[in-house]
Length: 190
Ligand code: UP5
Ligand code: MG
Image 1 (tube, helix red, strand yellow):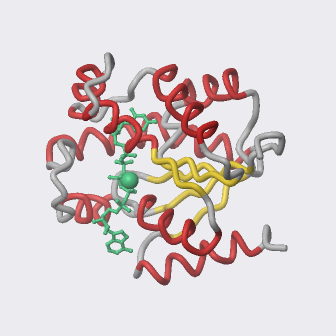
Image 2 (image 1 turned 60 degrees about the horizontal axis):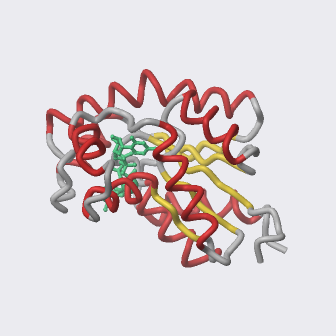
């Protein structure tokens, strides 16, 4: 129930590093609720919400949606679930995202997973995904990578200094990568 403080894992990594893929496996094995910030934002676009057009423009450019918008969507989603174990996938993207989350939610995550993947591999995965995402094209991928390098890596470094970061080598097969994930979550098993 909601009296219990939730256990929150942030899941970070560049575009196509495999965050969503590994989150699905974590859900299956450990019973987390998976909240992808990107999916929450894409849902806002398709439901024609007041911010939909702004979010679409931002995602097409590979830029970052204003923190308040994203944090409110995450906060609403967390409180709509009875579960108390959450994967927050693809957030925070910037130091400002992180600080806004801390201010509104009033807590740090319990752990931060970082899927570390070479850029050329990430590009290859994104461009072969073929699921009709407006940002899965050569031009936007380049922009997403630049934003990842310049804005998200500082967040990752911050969590490393805080001792919360768990880095996963995100090359190899999906199962090989999940084996590393499993070793991280084993620590939290009763
Ligand atoms: N694949 C996965 N693992 C593989 C493996 N080991 N070997 C071979 N192939 C593998 O995987 C990508 C593809 O690779 C899939 O086809 C998969 O089968 C294959 P996936 O698991 O989808 O990777 P993921 O890291 O989730 O990639 P995604 O493209 O979703 O990452 P992004 O971070 O770019 O996208 P997100 O949805 O998080 O954000 C999209 C945009 O929303 C951002 O660019 C930004 O504009 C906006 N946004 C915000 O503004 N604020 C936020 O807080 C969040 C998003
Ligand atoms: Mg994803």
